[in-house]
Image (cartoon, rainbow, N blue to C red; front, side):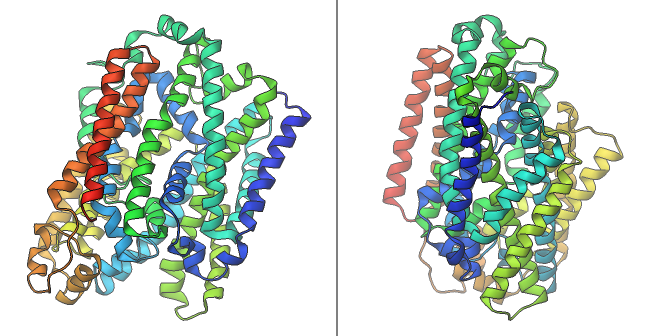
Length: 572
């Protein structure tokens, strides 16, 4: 793809603008770890929520979604659409609790919820595990996507592409902390969403409009639900996606019980209520607003290129072949925005574990805040280097997605119940993590279950879940519960509700309660209905199924009314 001088000016100017915006917050970020990693806990909900959306809108995401649609049709997106239920659990059951906990990272919660050496060991292990292998795999697949984009458009090799993008992104993240990430996320989200919409319009027009897509693509590939008996989505796999995966499997950005960079944004919000609003906005925008520009471009690619060798690369090919030269620089800026927002968050998030949960907790305990900020910057650079190396060994974006899903299968119930059942202890969580890892690896490499095969992926998920659940339940009841002192301190600080804490609550003074569990359950249903109604309603309107589309949008609006009323009338 040939870029004009103006295109290069747009690309370079966009990079420079982001770096300058980030550097503006260098002094503020340098004041303390609280400022560097949590922006002083003073972020408005709309900025925190938009930053969550921007983070999950990486350079890899349009390519991965295009690959799913090209291979399987619109219904291929259930690989990630199923996580709506998990996201809404975080909104109504966990966001307020996370903000109330007052921790700096989700891993720090471990030593608030559990006590003694098992809790300390679990915190150290989980911090190292999330900060390095998991986080660097995520950054690696985003690097893989960006390298593919740059190679196809400009011609640079993977090593050079990854090196340049990581270096420029790391330059401002390492000095500006979360404030720099949040402010640049806002700009990046606007740019990349706008350009994906522009590309979708151009692509659909090149494919003959919606009529051309409806004429050339079989109806079953335009269905939102997988056709019954489809080889790529057997009933067993669909059942796992819809009924199990969203609550049973740990996955970055969609953790059962919340966590990760989503929790980090909740911690940074001004209040519990703003943390809830931020997470709700994130889930609505994440699914209902972003999906269709990517899907339409992928559908257009199916018409324009009947034989596609590289399904994930088809998205970039549409841009190269059909985007007017005057918009190519802006489109590349959009890809850069998608890349930078995701990588910036993960560099900052990973460094928070390395410094807050490892270095400060176990190595240098009583240093100054400025010392810890300096080490945070070093940790950011270290994460950047390791992720660059990891990216050289990844081959498939969606394959990496499925690998992490399989590794985290079975840990979800523990991460949920630790908030709502006093009997969960540190050994419950430790045994769940170890059992999940051992079971998943044994099933993949011992029984040769391939996560790329849908039926075998379902077997892998269910097998790992069963083994993990039996293990952690057994371990929970054969080990001692946490001490009364630890349980009481956690209860008084976080104020969890429900029958699972009745034993602890009886021995303590009455605490202020949030919305009753039945109300939160109703809001969870309403939240899921809002997102799916908006997502599918918009899709039906686009595909000219007007009666069903209008009906779905009406359902979405009614769900929004229920949520607005409950959020107004009930405390959190």
